[in-house]
Image 1: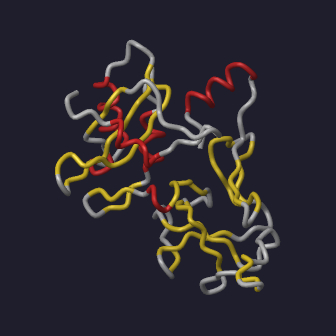
Image 2: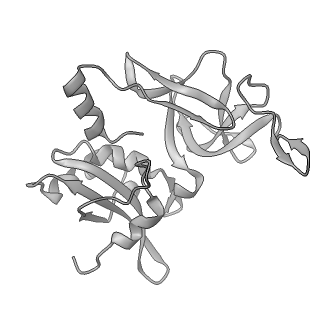
Image 3: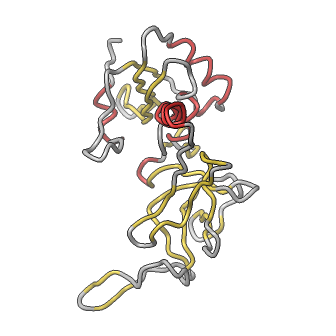
Length: 216
């Protein structure tokens, strides 16, 4: 999902919203936003999508695996393995490597790749949820959230922020305290000049812990 600052900059310059979409090679695009709700993904007409917690359907609002019905017209025939085509389904569903949550009105929130999900005190936390909250803070341009090991086997949630000066980190802490449950609030907020990104501009989350400076 786009950083809020990029979305707002586009809106200010073009007077039109960016409507994001979500898909993958195996199933084309199956979630998309609309001009009336450009920041919210919804299941496209004719597509059947569900969120699973293991082999069971996840409760509304619970983070789980984004899954596609095995009969979806956009779903691939399968992977070629030893000259055979294999379509890995679980009880008729293709489970992706992406995490999300379905809200009461049917909207889908993208939570990140399976490997991105954080464990905070036994709770599964989507770093993208935290990033979206902190991006709303004035002066914050980009946010990258991950876990860092502050001492052997002790991990905490850390937020690395690219900001415009002046930007008071206390404002970020206050926003997190207001809009996030305590276990989701970053214990570390650190300014950085830039976030690690690949050539396509996608955040390299695995590289974020290397930015942590314990002396700050």
